[in-house]
Length: 97
Image (cartoon, rainbow, N blue to C red; front, top):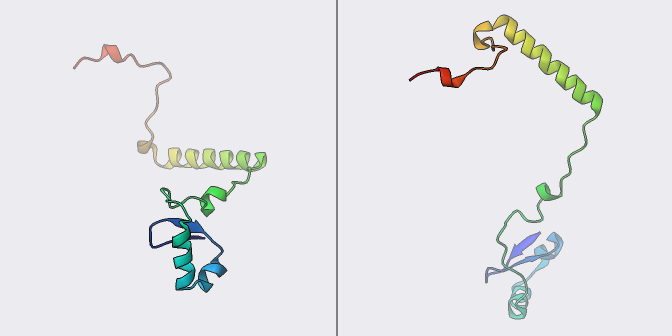
C-alpha cells in the first residue's frame, strides 16, 4: 500500500509494516529522504491490474440474438419511437432554409 510521509513523499510498504511503524521509523524514513511524489493517486491500483476475460463466441452470438429480439419487440409494440428510415440517401442540399 502507499504510505504518505509528512513531507509529502509517498512510499510503497506492506500493510503489516505500516501498522507496526513507530514515530522513530517515520523520522528515519524522512531523514533518508526516501519516497517519491505521486501525481496519480490510482497508480498501482486494482483497476490497473485487472484483466477482462475474453468473451466466448457463443456468448456474443447469444447477446446479438437477444438484442435483435428486444429491438423487434420494441419496434412492434412502440412504433412511434422508431420512425421508418428511408432506404435511399437523403440529399441535404435540396432542403432550403
